[in-house]
Every structure is written in C-alpha cells, then in structure tokens.
Image (cartoon, rainbow, N blue to C red; front, top):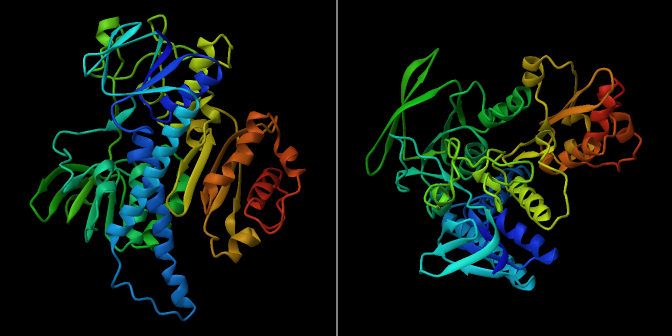
Length: 459
C-alpha cells in the first residue's frame, strides 16, 4: 500500500509527488495521458513557445528599419507548431525523469475512486493508498451553440494543434488565453477580432493597466470589441459567422475563417468516482479545508478541481501544502490570494497581485494610488519597449503594499520583486533603499516605489 496516491500528473500532481518523496512518503502518480498534464502538454508551455516565436517573427519589422529586406514567402507555420511540440516533448521527458529520479511510481491509465483508500484503473487493476490526492485538472468550457469541433471552431487545445494559419480568426473570450492567442495570431499575420462581454479585456485585471494593452492591440491591427456578447455561431466548411450584440452598436455579424472559443475552464470532477466516497461538488468544484483536505478523511484535492485561481503555480503550492500536512509538517494553511501573482504573456505583458482599484472602492478600503510610466526608465526606451506602466496601491496610513499592477515588456518577471516585498512585509521605502543596477528594467520597481511618496526621479 502506498502512503499517497495522486490522481493526475500535471503541475499540481507531479510537484506534489516529488515533495512527497522528499518527505519520505511512498507515493505513486496516476496519469491517463502524459506527465505534465494540460499545462505542459496543451497549455502553458506550447503557448509560451508560440509567443516566443511570434516575437521573433515580429522583429522583422525592426530589421526592415535597419534597411534589411525580409522575404517571408517561405514562411511555414507548420514548422512553428512543430517547434512548440518539441519544447513540450523535452519537458515531458524531463518530468518523467524527475519522477523516476525520486523513485516515484508513474501508473499510466484512467483511475476511478472506489473508496477513500483505493482507486480502480481502467485495466481492472487496483491501487491502494492511505491518502488520496485528487489533481485531475480542468478542460475547456463548452457552451451550447458554441461547441468546439477543433476544425472551424477551436478550443485552446485545438488552436495549439494547428499546422496552417487561418487568414482570419474571431476570438470569443478576452481573458488570458484569448489575449495571448490574439497576440500570437496577429503577429503571424492573421486578421484577428477579439470579443469580450465585459467592459474591458482581462476582466480580472486592473482596468487602467488593461487600457494600455487594448491600445497596443488596436495599434497592431487587432479589432477589440468589449461590452459585446456573442449570440450565435454558424459554420460552413470554409467560414464561421458569429452574431454579436453591443449596447451601443446593436447587433452585428462577424465573419472569419475560424473561431476560437475560450469562455473559461471546467473542473474534471465528473466521472472520477467522487460519489463512491460521498464527496459532493459545488458548481463542479470540490470543497476543501485549510490544508486542501476534503470532507472525507485522508482524501485531498488541489489545483483546478478546487475553487482557487486556476493557475499552475497555485496547484503546485496547494499540493505541497497537502502533502506536508499529511507528513505532519504543519505548513502555513491555505494560500493568501492577495500574494498570488497573475501573469499574461502577450506583448505588452500584464502582471499583477493583490487588490485592484475597483475592489478597493467597492469594499470601502482606503488606498493611495501611484503610477510610473515605462518611458521614464532608460533601458525601456533603449530597447524600444517604452509602452507600459507600473501601478501601486498602498495603505495611506501605514504604507503597506495592497496591490501591484503592471503592463509592459517583461513585467511577468519584474512583478516578483514587489511581491517578495509584500510577503516580507516590507514598505515601499524599504525597496527604495536597495540599489538597482542601471540601466535595467528593474529600475521600474525602484521608481514605482519612489512614486508612492511623490519622489520618483524620472517622472
């Protein structure tokens, strides 16, 4: 019998397994597909590779400004897609190696929970363990009338499988996935229209930051339609037709070669046997306690199957919390949602953590806002990436950092210095005391914290 059996080998499952091995627990990981889960195989990794290649392709404009003529007639998107799969294969093999290195059993197949200490595999075999951790992840949400056939109407999985670019694409859903693929497709020359029902793209990000992204999208030729609801979708072999409605413009008809539907994700909690142990879901999610424990003793749930942010790094940390609790290590309970970084990898990038300005207003929380523009930092101007800003919300009395919101080049990397300051309970003036190398983009953080007290040098 295993000490721990983990169902799912995504970034939640495999990280949990390795941590369990470090703690001396006999552990197995059950995976119906390849190690790494959706994130590595059909999400985070291949999409970031495409974004990287889109950036390289876009640089031909800069080369032309140098007087270099670029002939793109031989461009083959199939090679781009192949390269993204090569990155995936390399990392899948890496995860498999890490599992083997840590003497973890990887059991291939589909599992169904039969009791709190056992799961039955699709080949009829049984796996028994003192503790079960459910890490089965999520899948693209399907909405009636907008079902994905992965030919004309694509999901986030389907668009990663494309080996030939469409001439035009309608993206329904302006969240992180929609914005990232809008950037990629536009960079490679696809005519892109992105439709979002809320009043701005990235509805869970700061509106002032997203305004900068929307301006950049429109400048690059992406048609951005916000406060717009998709009413229906019709398709033929060569075209999709989407009827949308906007309070000001009324009903409109959009046509494109393909559509990408990214309305969100659905937790994979159906069909895994939860009813056999008496676990009831809430809107598809498994209720858990401070240490990711379910209502059934010895059974835990992490990642996209619980109602926390559907992010790979959240799943990994939840897994560590759960397995450390199992090992009797008494970790810090739960995750501080205000200390979880968000990262969107289009160009310009968007990154954030903590309180948004609209949340502060609606909750009656007193705050002070400070802004610092990218063009105030020499490195940003020198590398021709001066489009963006850093926004800090602080407590007007104590100076505590309440939230940070960024848009611009490489902000998904820059955000962590200020996040470390928050979790370490440092104040803006503490960050300001550290010398930042010049010229670097990290000077944005230095100037951003100086702006809180009105002492920014280059603004």
